[in-house]
Image 1 (cartoon, rainbow, N blue to C red):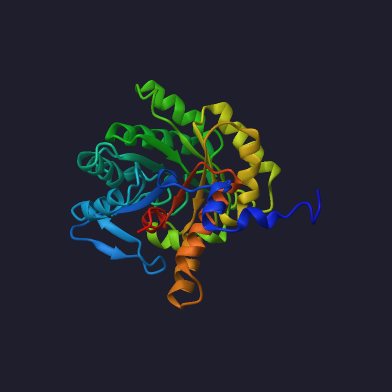
Image 2: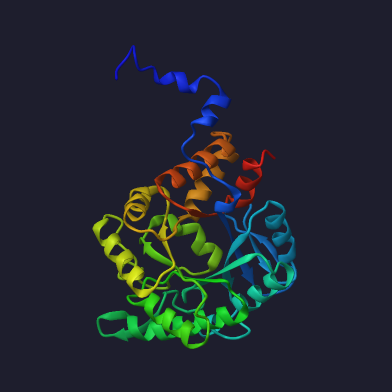
Length: 329
């Protein structure tokens, strides 16, 4: 039907009416808050490119956890910033590695908090790549299969520490299968894998690399992270992870890739996760600090767009603020 029979504005006349017909909603239950845990004592160090986001040592971590819990957020994603690094990222899978100790600390303070462990090597290797590097006459090559062994060991150590979900972010071929096999072998058959299934080689990661101290010391990650121009390849990546036993599928970054979120949502029944990444956060924060935009309105509109595209869960550095705004605080 067309105007004047159809008057679409009839359903927009008041806030109450708009609420009745609203198709998409964001809830605090949709939000996952990232945490950066670091070595040392008394550390609460703001990350310069991510205002409001901090490095926390284990003795100060309770302050951040209390803030997250008071906002009603039920899940955190743990990143570790170690003091020692080597060629294969040994501290990623040590029993007393920073991530493992961070997980145990969180679970001791908030047993019901869902703890998701980022499973990668880049923060723990001295070269900053997400796998084992072999030097050749032509340069350096990331050894996919040797990397899988290290990643599987890391996942098992995180599960032993108490992680509820393993979230591998390395983009090696076969990483879900390798981690699933290792977890099952060690008795963690009920530990889900939240796969970074579609992770693009994006310029939106800059502030995170400062936060995680994970900038590659040579080259880049384009031989294993995806070309931002490709969508069909994203479906192939996701399909492989589903076949290998992934329990969640993640798209990273978020804003420039909502078409990929929709494609996965239309094809798979698994929960879809989107990562509202560091530069997406930093751009909003920087503009808000200049008074150029309404931070609350922009953040909630962005999160709604991610949900509308098909995401079930959103990892975001805005999580605490968004949770309070959603609850009217």
